[in-house]
Length: 144
Image (cartoon, rainbow, N blue to C red; front, side):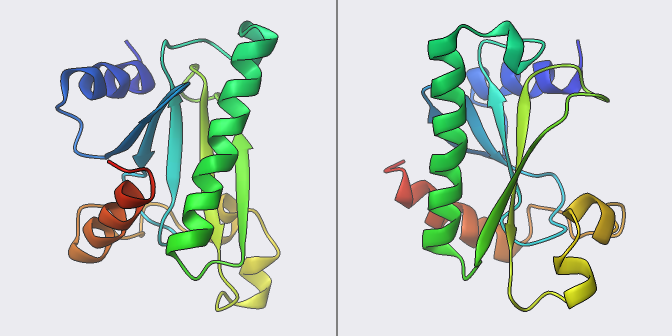
């Protein structure tokens, strides 16, 4: 079982502390680390290998949920843009990285994908007070 499958199983069981909301296509979770405040992931449930493994309707729902997560970040943070990335290379299960971007970022970092501009290993862990407060705001946005 890969990490995405484990996290989905934990979300189903109610034991994943990173869950923000159950969405039509899966689970919106806060990232384990926060290279930028509000970094989230959308984990497909059921788990699929890739976006291309979904039907057209399932793809539409997943991508719509991804954009809705971005709307939530725009609403509850002071971010000015949201970046969306779907990789699945290290963890071969469909999940989207949803990264808020801020005007306050250094110009040389703001122009790059966050994975290239920030050290993930040095980023703050997600269950600190600031992130927990942000998770509360995101949950309220979704009515959870």
